Length: 435
Image (cartoon, rainbow, N blue to C red; front, side, top):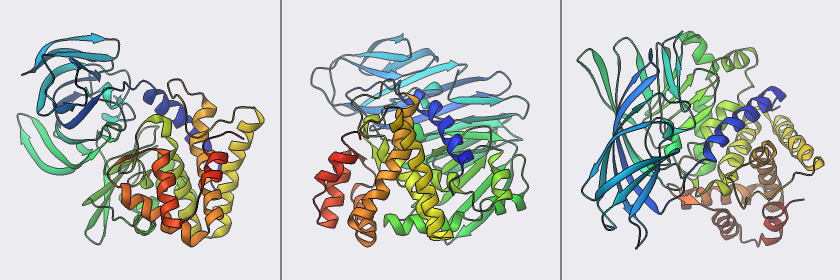
């Protein structure tokens, strides 16, 4: 069963992640790549960085762009077309001379003490990112604006770094350990991140895929037990999506008090390991974050209005894995727990369509709808068109839109095309309207 404790964990996480997402600034901006060089100072809770951004502007009359910048202080902005810049609240407005549709490049030097997004644990000498990338790197927060990401990061020599992308190099220079990572596929900025600390580590192989597990508080043997379902989960999601995982590594880190999927790794609350050691079937959050490597990171909602396409899919897939691994009864228990959350929202008169008109100030019930009502609706869709047709349609949808950004109409059209079924009535009742 998806335990009440796990649901409570997800509800708390929702309050944090979605408050960060609600602040996104949507611009007519298409970022091609970010090349970041950053030095975190754990003792001072400080960062200094330089980010090179290549982009194009999808507008004929734009003479500026707006980036998200949190509370960071901007030292310098330079580029061939840059004429000036100003910080406005959490935004960085950059004036441009003319509009070159292709080939724009700017370099931004910045520093600051992030008030969220990058968390420092002075007691344990750790730092890790969560939710709000623009709090520690100047970027465009819009989930539909995917880009390549290159990270150079300098950390103390006695610590380990895990980050988004493939590890390109690790060099000891000038008293620091310099890590370089390259992510060779476009991903939304909220999936960029890193974790720094003194970790115990365990690893295992799934074919050519290297699986890494990290924690300060658990031994290597305990990590192998906590994450023992990982190889089977990856194989399950590959089969259900019809798309291979695609990277050479997947890492999971038990750290802090948060949960989030990143590109190529996930972080999970440190004490969550105790729950899994006590009950080996309590793996919903492991499978939920892993499912995002397909649904969320690679098939991504174009805007937060369609956020359910990310979170409902991952929540449903955690139940589907439980069915595969532990049986139909456990799957039904998960679905029942999702429905209980949804039913409570309905009884309060707060049901809404899964496609939101606005996501600028979502309530806690709004946030719960995209996860739990959304997962329940996917269960109903499965019952509506039948098991075999449903999974064929999920594979078709995932493969068709893999690497792209989607809206709900893309999902509906793909399911209809694959199944040969008109689903207007179903989507009107369960997705576009409230009940």
